[in-house]
Amino acid sequence: MAPLNLHHLRLFRAVASDGTLTGAARGLNLSQSALSTQIKALEKSLGHDLFERRGRGLIMTEAGRIALDHAEAIFRTADDLTATLRETGRGRRALRVGALATLSRNFQMQFVRPLIGRPDVEVVLRSGSQAELLRGLESLVFDVVLTNLAPPRDAATPWLVHRLAEQRVSLIGTSARLGQVPRTIQELLLQEPLILPPPETALRAAFDALTSRLNIVPMIAAEVEDMAMLRLLARENAGLAVIPPIVVQDELAAGLLVEAARLDDVTETFQAVTAARRFPNPLLSEVLAQGRFG
Figure 1 (cartoon, helix red, strand yellow):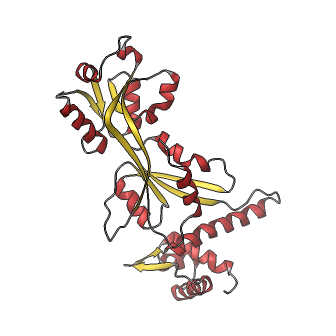
Figure 2 (cartoon, rainbow, N blue to C red):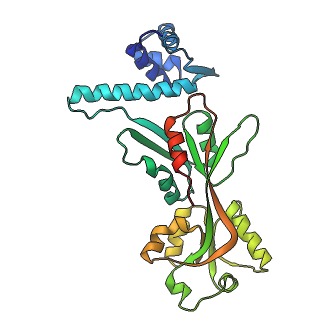
Figure 3 (tube, helix red, strand yellow):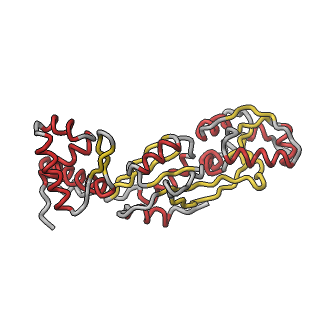
């Protein structure tokens, strides 16, 4: 393998940032053909294609994404070296995590906690819709996607789904609402307004099945997609929340909320979704090995 040319690596980073040879060449004040030749020289040096063409743009290959991570670390370290002779610029590996925007923040924190505080690791956490996250996973923007919605799996998108936790779901509310006298699940469901996830979620489907078996038509105070808002409504005493205790573990520990009853056969499943990679991020296997809980 030929020695790595840092000039070629810097040009590669510019192309990766712009997404087109034309735009990158204009910004670098180079001809498109000259830039293309130097990118090809870098690919030959590394032994892998770094881009594939889609329409008029360029999409990084998996090898390209890895090369970009290392390029950023190299140039970040070089910048630190010019600023100080102290050892403050050690290379850091990055784990790029996409999380469903409505997913419990407590669950997200439990997943990345093994990496927090490590001097050799940078955690990049972004949120979005399921469709956005899966597109990001396919295009190598993310190493892993955290979700509670099982993604469709077919020959074109063979996602690898890692089940991390199946959390029980409870009725949770303020002590003022629940009072001192214990009540059965049936009494709570009949007497108290409820804060529920929306009908299209798996959690809601399981809850609706439970109330159907019990022949109960619940009073719905609110339907909330975002778990953080559901938690806030419970704290504001808007009703009893149908929610996994992990979502409100801090409020339960502080006594701001109380777990009134566990709901039989109603659970929330948390999953990590990955894609088969020729060059898997080594941090991913570390965090998946430690990330199963619940």
